[in-house]
Image: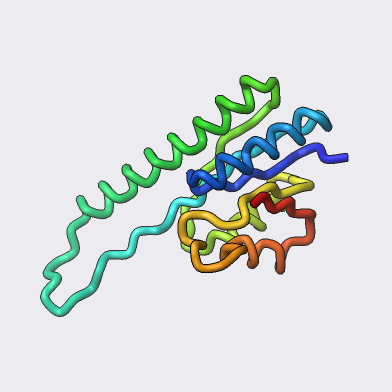
Length: 146
């Protein structure tokens, strides 16, 4: 049925809960998992008195973002490995999370996206805005885990 599952994560508790579903389903149908974390792009704050741009701040932001992505993705690959499910980690830098999820699913040949109903930024609604966007614009099935 499914051969390749995309599992986007923001590292939240809800994402970890959804991971159990993704791994269980992948194991049951013999699918592999691509774990994705979308790293936000750095934009320096602009204020009247902000002074000159400091490239070290941008470099530190990028190092910390990639480090955080590596931690999130390591959780997924370790859990998949423990369950005997093949997986691959991937992080992409973009400020358009939903579009990136859809693009990566297409580029990687995924036939299912498994994601949480909301993540770190989606506390205001039952379905997070990124989840809603993925549901509205992707052409492949999406399993949303509450």
